[in-house]
Structure formats: C-alpha cells, structure tokens
Amino acid sequence: MNVKPAELPAILAEIMVEYDTARSRAIQAQGSQFNEAAFHAWFTEQVQGPGALSTTSTAL
Image (cartoon, rainbow, N blue to C red; front, side, top):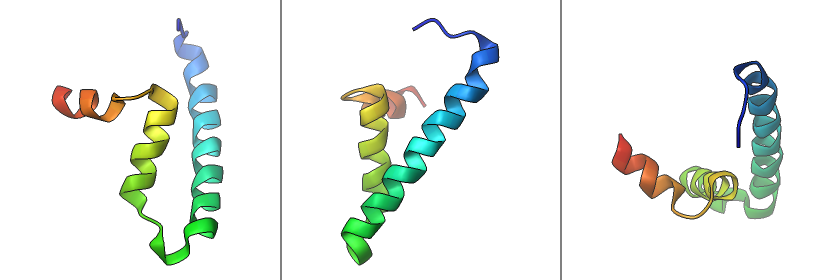
C-alpha cells in the first residue's frame, strides 16, 4: 500500500475509531473477563495480519 504522508492522519483516525468501537464491544461482551493485552494483540493482527506482533517485537 502506497500512502502519502498527508493521508496518514485520516488513516490513523479511522483505525482509532475502529479500535475504540471494537474495544467497547469486547468490553460489553466479556465484562470483567476483558483482557486489554489480548484485545490489543487481536486487533493488531486484524489490521496487520498474522504474525504482526511477533515481527514487531523482534524488530524492537
């Protein structure tokens, strides 16, 4: 995907809206069982694809 720097703010805003919506739904569905780290890992995989977190963590 070829993204122009000027497009990044809108793209990030859209991703954050999706994140907040999905997080709210997960909290409603899971209640006290909601796990922030597990949700973040799941969402990242949805956006970046399988193995995204393992690739990111080894690059740090």
